[in-house]
Image (tube, rainbow, N blue to C red; front, side):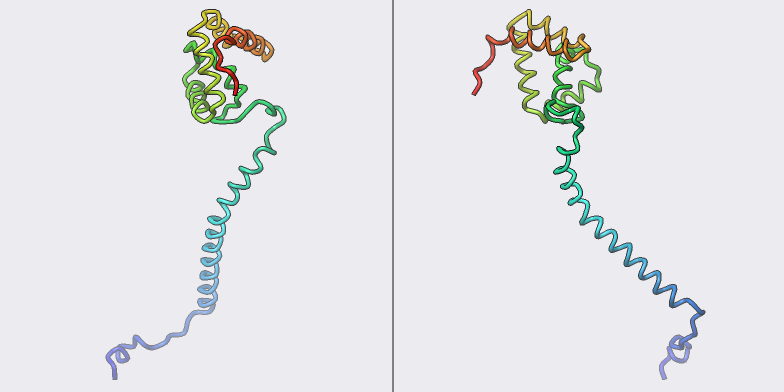
Length: 160
């Protein structure tokens, strides 16, 4: 006879009532949790792709025609900050947000570069650009941008 059998280690003992049922329930619960984690990991990229595809349809109508949306700013909102940005009077948080938008948005970057070139070449354009930051209404901003466009027209590169 084996020494283990003599020690009583191989002897089966009766389990208290419900012990096996509890073990089975715990194992099923652990399997359900593992399956839920796997499904969530597989579904997350699909949800992100779906959200990205639906985003253009979820954009409020108030922002239709206002350009792209980068770094928390619409292009139209970005343009209204150019005057203060060039003048150096933009608050730090807005400046950082505008700069992040400019990194992602080539159209706004080009508009700002044109504005800065125009200011360097035309002192009247500098005054108009500084007034852009002081105008609060959309129509005032549009009027100032129109004046700036007329002043900078001789300095613009021909359109492709």
